[in-house]
Image (cartoon, rainbow, N blue to C red; front, side, top):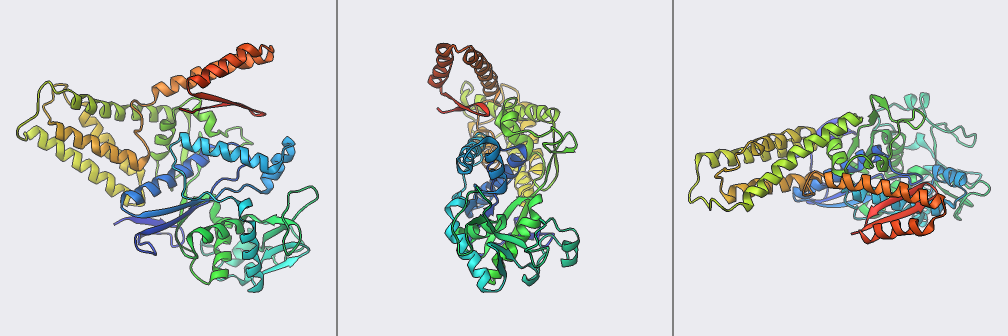
Amino acid sequence: MLKVYNTLTKEKEDFVPIRGNRVGMYVCGPTVYDYSHIGHARSYIAFDVIRRYLEYKGYTVIYVQNITDVDDKIIKRANELGENPLSLSRRFTQAYFEDMDRLNVRRANVHPKVTEHIPEIIEFIDELIKKGYAYEVDGNVYFSVSKAKDYGKLSHQSMDGILAGARVEVDENKRDPRDFALWKKAKKGEIFWESPWGKGRPGWHIECSTMAIKYLGPEIDIHGGGMDLIFPHHECEIAQAESRTGKPFVKYWIHNGFVTINQEKMSKSLGNFFTIREVLEKYNPETLRFFLLNTHYRSQIDYSDQHLEEAKQSLQKIYNAINKLKTLISDQSWGELKESTPEESEFLEHVEKSKQKFMEAMDDDFNTREAMPAIFDLSRIINSLPTDSKLSRKALEKALQVYQEFGEILGLFQQEKAGANLETVAKLVEILIDLRNKFRKEKNWEKADYIRDKLKEAGILLEDSKDGTIWKIIK
């Protein structure tokens, strides 16, 4: 029986969807004002695996992940760059999907954008006002926290505790310091939409409640995100949704842990802030994905080059086993066994035990950390097989099939080798980009264009922007 840790109850619970075999799953997506960092990678890989495992178990998963494409941070960054906010958010939305594609994170069924759901958001806010849960002051609309039922139940805080440590903006228009914005009056020069309360734009929390309910209904099986979203974001989502519908908003709240850099919290101010693209300049995408999955999703994970190197070596051992299986299967010189041998029976027993241990770990709150030893144990046995092993083709194919199942769940083992070739390609492409940049500075456009065109012919597309040149594989 699959058990899931629920932040709401602080317990592991049997996973029983609301609607039989159908699972509605909403995960808070990125605010697209910059390139995605490894914290994003950690979160979206974790939920990608959760989705994959649920599907492996036979559930039909409807996965929704939003894109916040208008926000204070987006407006601020756009002003700094002298760029239209929506143009900036489109650019970084595309960059986000490129990064996730490289990390083998499958697209959600729906990626709703805030700017495409303004009418629904306005309708949601208007309904809260009519029900007495929200109020308008000078073009701003606020949610009245004191009127919400059980506010603080997700973060396990009392109303007094929330007031004492509230992370709220100073706003004289609020009736209560805990109240939060549903609609923000547009400042001079800011992007805006027309509303019953004047020109403005949505607050952060109302966006997710609106889009989650639109695509998944008033009651959702799983809602996820990073632990930093528990309060205030997810707490506010609950207040808004349940005040409007009168129904429990989410059955299982799932949150992933933080990423630290060399034992320090990841922060731009500390200079230890790495984008996914920076990491993938040095390491293969599967290496990063493997590293992140080698820790349970709820645990804190410490990023360092040393840990990535260890992950790279461990992943190579698994690929060695997979490639050895393929080699043994293709070697027909010894023919096919007519009957099972003690060696083969023992081998198949190891294969079955490894699969069982893997699934038991995944059933225990998607514990990839405890699932990995099952893969390592099987790989060690396969790597120690003699090259003249007389295991039957059927036994070897059974082992390979188990690796394929592991790989489909984890989103790993998709390459012929552990990515050494791609890492080499990445280094060579970066060298060519540096050389092309040198030619461009020298205004030697012919040689610069030659490098760009030849790379494109080879299936590598270069894209120039104010932030530099990025590349992606197009075939």
